[in-house]
Image 1 (cartoon, rainbow, N blue to C red):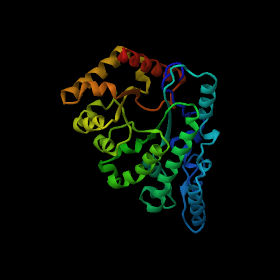
Image 2 (spheres, rainbow, N blue to C red):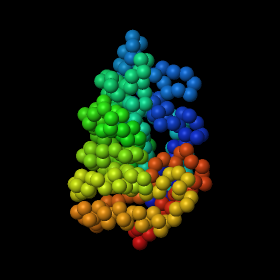
Image 3 (cartoon, rainbow, N blue to C red):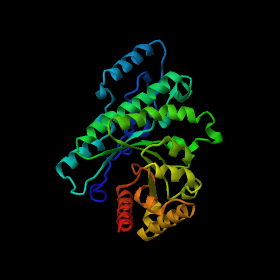
Image 4 (cartoon, rainbow, N blue to C red):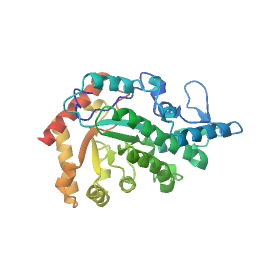
Length: 320
């Protein structure tokens, strides 16, 4: 990580190392009223008679500013203390930012279910608990990463937004999504972190732009054509100071057969088509980040390293 991304490294999530580092279990441990659903299954939420005391204790911790209640335990995020330790000992001279991440509240609220099997997204009380929890985790993580002495970028990873606006999730309304995102984006702003939202599939990108995180991250390898349907929304977003993060390098075995030349050509064609739709080419380049298209935690070290090598090479050539 520090070799290929010395300016902007991120701590690695390692779901192959432990099921506790999966998207739901990694961040669910801070939530109240969780009950085991058996080995290999996500926990269930029970806000029944015993849940009232747990909810009261939860909000007492929030009001008291007890961020340690929302910490990531080492067994759920082995990459975080390792990342901090390595940067403390071997700090790249080029270091400008560090990136952290949380499972987004929409994804968390659609992954967890109550005892009847209903997504907690549709429980008004518990939906607020999920949003509050993720906001507190953002505060805790930003406080930790800020000790490294450079600005922190904190992403909400929201694969569940792939179904937003489709027939597969008619109940996932804009109002529900914003009720979950606003506390999290506000929390990042309050603690001085830059916020990002990442969706690795296709979604209503105009809606993400209007939600106004500092960074919108999309899969530019597989879904560039879909993003190009939103030139006006993208133009307003960039004009307002937002950054578009292009997930240019695919996070699968396709990376092995690709060259930096091919990826650079894809990026240039995408930017040219945005420019033809009226976007300022200089603004597009200036407010641009390059990223992998999605997470690399399920990949072999060899494939992950190939992806980072391609990313670093394309970035170098774009800036040159």
